[in-house]
Length: 260
Image (cartoon, rainbow, N blue to C red; front, side):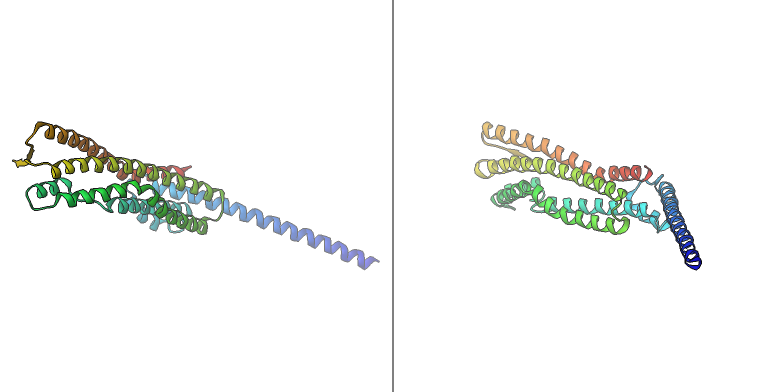
């Protein structure tokens, strides 16, 4: 009986030692992970503190190639570039070109006002469907970013927070595209009215770059439509400036996230 008791005691002691080693290993690994996270946070804060231009982000990442936080910020910047490119590509589709130039060419016989009118109709259709087409394009971008971030970070709390910010980034661009789409639609419709007036009226002349009409009523209608187009053109220019500024504001948001 004594050898059996001794064997059992040794087995218990051995099991306790193994358990202690496992617990110690788990604690060490967890502590090492916490240390690495802290080191990543300090490195990312140092790298991003004075970063002003998104184009410089890749250079900073080369200095800290193993920093996960910086890699996620670079991934978010990639997303920002891709949604900008998608938006810009859609905005350029079915663009009727420099409208005032085409009007002058049409009035001087070097262009076709009716063809311009058809192009404006196509541009109106394009503007009306801009939002839905953007959504289809951007889904693939979002899915790719989610896959890359999951591979890089894993399904952690930080990953979840990252994707919430990515979705907010997409929502901001989606809202801007909706505004641009609505204003572009109004703009093309107003310009189409100008072109229709010019194409359907007789007695129109261009004197020193100014359009003159045979009847005052014609001139009043045209001037009213032209004033609307000028207002909408200013609004479109403001929205374009907002689109360009978004990338910098997104970077500022990611810098705050990395410092949090």
